[in-house]
Image (cartoon, rainbow, N blue to C red; front, side, top):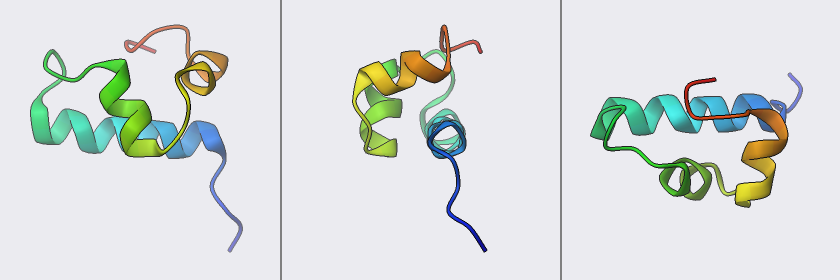
Length: 51
């Protein structure tokens, strides 16, 4: 099985954070830290947290 794309890794990290903390309590920094990516990578794949 191949490695997940960076976009998918970020999305999975976001879902874990939303589940643990709630959507409104989760910031972009929480998501990028959990995914192990720089903030620029997040915005390269998503225009906002809502995406």
